[in-house]
Structure formats: structure tokens, C-alpha cells
Image (tube, rainbow, N blue to C red; front, side):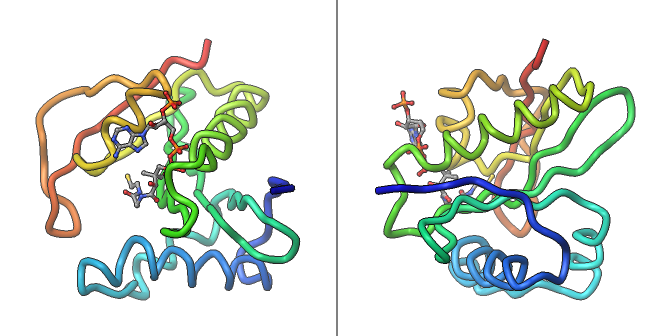
Length: 145
Ligand SMILES: CC(C)(COP(=O)(O)OP(=O)(O)OC[C@H]1O[C@@H](n2cnc3c(N)ncnc32)[C@H](O)[C@@H]1OP(=O)(O)O)[C@@H](O)C(=O)NCCC(=O)NCCS
């Protein structure tokens, strides 16, 4: 499988593909859909996709925060392609991007079910479990330097 990773602009055709993937992977299984307020948050962020040809197979978003901390969010891999290393490949590319921009730490609100994935990438749980989109989460973080 030949894949490539790229960033794309908010409201581009690729953004529309990523939104569809996020909806299928991160919202529909929970019986939820994106709200206007949630999508508004995408506007100033950096959008990453892993593609095979024109087809998006995985996506994530980076949000710049204070103190050289980058937040990784909305990590989603097409269900048919999960467990094949694509999430890892895309996350590592995003970490390198953040490092190149001078960020020291990557953190995320990890679903409890995805914690082993982040642990395999070197992230540690920080603090107590909490609920977001009705399911248990942890804050997880990794030092980039
Ligand atoms: C979680 C998710 C992003 C992981 O992406 P993926 O492409 O399936 O994972 P990868 O194949 O890249 O796995 C990378 C590593 O994590 C491990 N891993 C991934 N999911 C795991 C799980 N649920 N339990 C244990 N280990 C897991 C893999 O074994 C692999 O380890 P290795 O590098 O030692 O071989 C993806 O499965 C997904 O989209 N899940 C549904 C949505 C979701 O939970 N998103 C995250 C929201 S915080």
C-alpha cells in the first residue's frame, strides 16, 4: 500500500473528506454528531491526513497551546485500516511537525480504549480519568525533546 501524509486547509476538499472520516469513526459509533461549536475549533488548527491516492485513511488535528505544548486531537483511522500502523505513522509525522515548530510536549485527551495505542508511542497518563463525549478519557502526554 502506497500512502502519503499531507496537511490541508480548513474548508478544503480534503478537509471535507477528513470530517466525513471523523464523523464515521469518532461520532457515529457514539450516536453523536459534530456541533457548530466543535467545528469552529477546527478553523485555526493544522489538519493532517494520511492518503492512499485521493482516499483519506487516517486524520488528526494539531492545536497550538501555551508553554510550547501542542494538543493532538481527533485522531481517526478508517475502521477497515485500523491496526496496520497507520495511526502510528500519522502521529509520528505530527510529532515531528510540532518539534520542528519548536513545541516541547505533545498531549491529548485520549479515550481510555485508545490509551494502549498512545502508550505504545511513548505517551504517559497524567492525572485522573474524566468523561468527554460521554466516555472515559485520560490526558496523555509525551516529551518531544
Ligand atoms: C486508536 C487508533 C487511532 C490507533 O490507530 P491504528 O492505526 O489502529 O493503530 P496502529 O496500527 O498504528 O498501532 C500502533 C501501535 O499501537 C498499538 N495499539 C493500537 N491500538 C491498540 C489497542 N486498542 N490496544 C493495544 N494496543 C494498541 C498497536 O499494537 C501498535 O503497537 P506496535 O507499534 O508495538 O506494533 C485507531 O485504532 C482508531 O481510529 N480508533 C478509533 C477511534 C479512536 O479511538 N481514536 C482515538 C481517539 S483519542
